[in-house]
Length: 170
Image 1 (cartoon, rainbow, N blue to C red):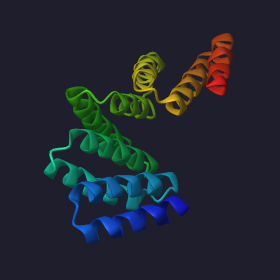
Image 2 (cartoon, one colour):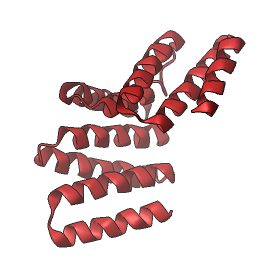
Image 3 (cartoon, rainbow, N blue to C red):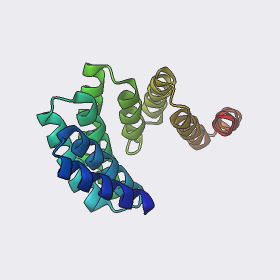
């Protein structure tokens, strides 16, 4: 909740300053905070505002990451088709502009509604490699955890244990 309040204040200041880049960044952070607080409808609306503003600013990294937040919000709303569509847009933009962290985030969220566990592992491997390239350790831990969960579903308990241990170590 504190993150939402801080992002709202940042957005107010950014709008007062008329600095569109700061406004777009504040919208993105606000949408992230709203999604993490399970305010999915607000997060989706805020993320779309960020997408539009980043697009106007010709900032593909911000736009792609805002699509990822929209995917997260749509997933939280129980709208898997919309979540997948938003995640695919995030992935396409991130790959096109070379945003490795964006690639990792999009690949990870694409697994959330994927019934094919082999494809999930491939997407998670892609996400893990992208996060490693970006130096984003917390996200690497999350991906290792998600791979461990997939291995649990497959009954590969030794591999699951190894991945869950790796997640804890990270």
